[in-house]
Length: 134
Image (cartoon, rainbow, N blue to C red):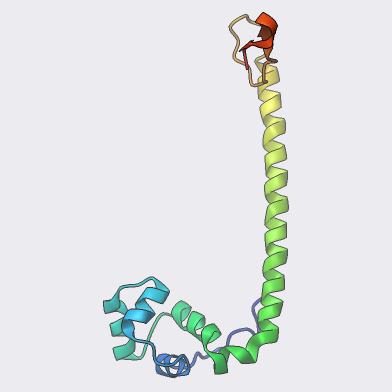
């Protein structure tokens, strides 16, 4: 699915940071939502988790720019996935509505104190000044 977007072997963290203008550990930490100590450790070891390297790879001008077409393809794939998820949620919601209607119908005995899931019509008295029931 993501073939061609990311390299099999990621560039070193130092190369990615150099391409991004050598941001400070504090700025790197703030951008990635990690602690300064974590960012300092990554820089000192010249290693970071692959997910971090992927983010920096896509942000780095000379590395990420090579995969512009791949990013467009990835965005289109993401859009198709989002549409498929939306359709799945719509189908699931419809199935749940049908199931709820079936359960409500099973327990519809016509009791005076029976709970209802339907909205009651508003009853207006006193010339429309005071609605009763909603």
